[in-house]
Length: 241
Image (cartoon, rainbow, N blue to C red; front, side, top):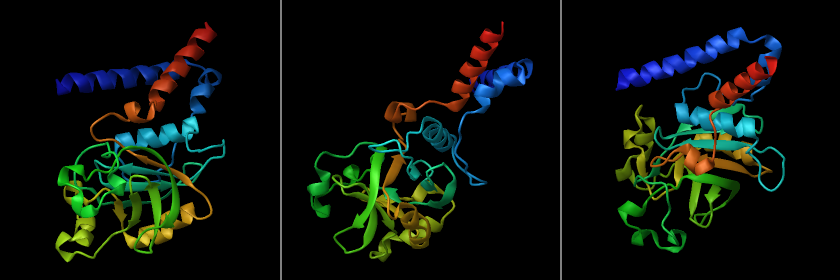
């Protein structure tokens, strides 16, 4: 089965490559105009790249107007955060600690409950598109509010409970031990201060938390750029006939 899938992937990629070669440069120019996020040399999952590319190409990183805004991709599966400027240029990436429980939905009203009343299975980092802004929390610290009503923010890693070993969890090379919070997104303090806070100072932005139980297309109504490129190439080919 895996071999069959790989073969299908190779066949579709080969088809697109051959099609691009057969087309004249003028015919392929529309496909070349697709916009993509620039991850530099940062390692990122396929889904993180697909969503970031879609955000830039579709211009989805705006709120009430058409002005482009900084945006963040939170990859829960890889436990990693990517911060981009409004044009899709990577400003930085870092590991993250996330909600203890696997899941993409927040329990209704959870932001109004005491932490001691929240059960382990309710400690999720919800997936979705959130308009984010800097603000203060109950500890008097500045945070990036992702979902204010749900009490989900992105902030400096908490170290108040040594037994949780949060700094050590961030330092390990695997995401397997990065699920520990009530739902907030903990990141290294230096990354928050040098990347996140400057990116959102004087503006709001968009945070995309990738799902782990559903597809990104379900959550964001996104598209893959290679599919759009294939359609443009086929359209160009048909118009050239």
